[in-house]
Length: 169
Image (cartoon, rainbow, N blue to C red):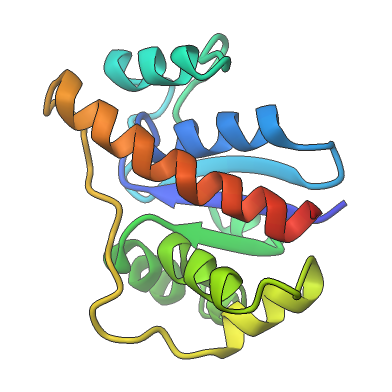
């Protein structure tokens, strides 16, 4: 089963939201996980993001933040990062991950440009196309309040739906 790893900073807002929403939308043919490059290890999801997940039918129950490890990188078939700096960190720490790591926003942009591609084909296309300048990061809502969490959740929900459709179509 292919494994997708969502990566953010603390693994308490964006990446766990993406992980849990992807699992909710998934048909079970892809495994979704998350980790942070500076994780708040063992911490639950940030409450405003957990509330946003709950509003979409998901749950943060049992979630605990995880630090991104070399073994997690090795085991992932696709790493989707929330920010350019996360991608740079992953590739710096584990150069072997270069051909499996991209930005979430880049992946979904490629998927939108090539809607006929699914599964391995869209992964290959997204990972071989250079990331253009100006590709947006997903803003970090950590400790920014309910409004920032709602905005981040809406943006993430759109991207996560595209990921699940593109991979599991």
